[in-house]
Amino acid sequence: LKLSALFYDLGDVGRAMEFTERYCLRVPSNLEQLKNLLRLSIEVGRREKALRVARQILMLNSEDAEARNYIIEME
Image (tube, rainbow, N blue to C red; front, side, top):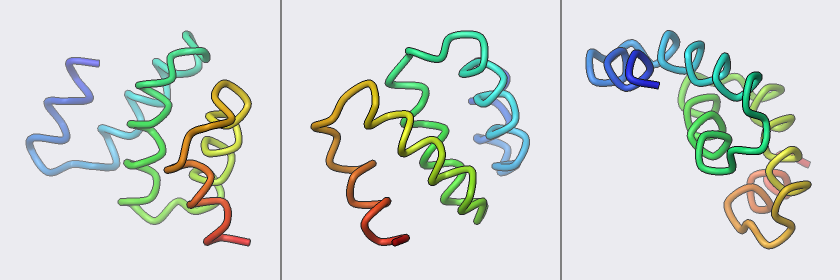
C-alpha cells in the first residue's frame, strides 16, 4: 500500500490502482482499500473494474452510499 500511495503522490494513478488491486486480491474483505480501488478505478476511467469493485463493496456493506450511487449511475 505504501507503493500505491507513492505512485498516487507522483501522479501515476494507473500504477497506484495496480498496487491497490494487488492488495485487494490478497485481502478481499478490507473495505477501506476496496473503496480506494473504486475511487482509483473511476479516476482512470476503468468503468467495468469500478462496477465490479462497487458490487464487491456492497456485498460487504450493503449500506455503502458511494458504491450504491456509482452502480445506480452506471446502470
